[in-house]
Image (cartoon, rainbow, N blue to C red; front, top):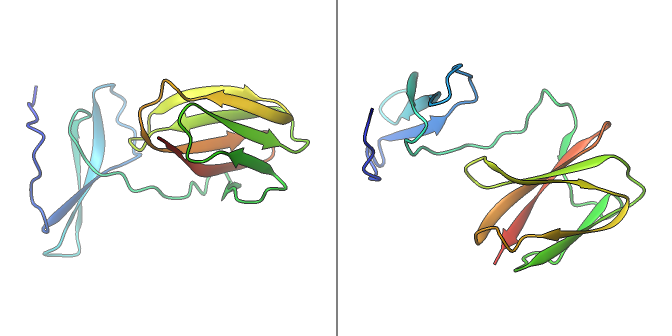
Length: 147
């Protein structure tokens, strides 16, 4: 088993990025390396305990992921928040909410109803999160800051 010393390597020379390519094992995952010395992209398999960057891209396979800033769809407030925030949904039914940390781990999920929904975030660590809201017809996401 590899031991990781939490140090930065190849600064200004290479970028290490996790891939969404499945490996089929629980403890390892693929990642890509971009080198400043050339245009090639290398693929490697490594332990998930290794620290690497995550580049967030729009998932084109779902067809409808949008950044939600339209208050006709929903309103999230206050943002930032310390203890609770509210999501107001306008006549939208069967809505699932998932909150992801910046590592991509789902740290909370909840079913939302039409109208005002209170979300208790006291247990979350301070930081930036991505909130994903989905139902049968669309999916959207927005950024949330926990203070």
